[in-house]
Length: 170
Image (cartoon, rainbow, N blue to C red; front, side, top):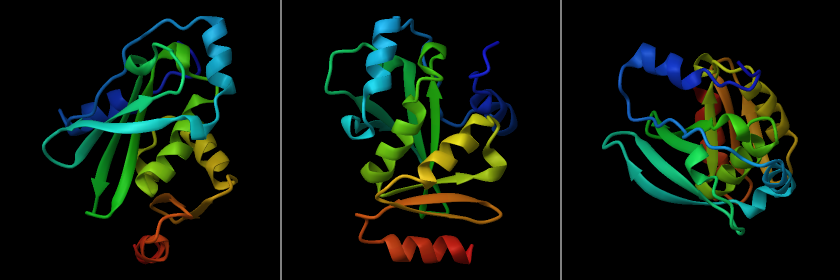
């Protein structure tokens, strides 16, 4: 098993039953395509909403400015927490792990959705802590942590102060 094997979906699924989160398809990516992905900037990524679970989870699809057949290997779902916070759930095919794509996805979602939240008790993959540490040093975002989780808010978000206040009150 690779050190990049994310356990979050399987563990979360076993704890919570069937909840509407998706699993990425295991695709093969050439070394050349991995280098291309590695060289992408977070601003190159865009997102479209492609559906939902009928409750609190929306399903996103990544859009790229280049022709790469990797979208089936990237799963990003956003769960609405306390009717306020967007908790991100991400799954990457094995071949897409360890090349910097995860951090780029998180950073691009911050601007696309306005903010993202991560509950510390829900993190079953230690790599996610590294992703959040990287996010906190990015320009254009305001991040905060408490005992329950982390949040990063786009500085472009007109609700920045309100979301930060709600997070810090929690």
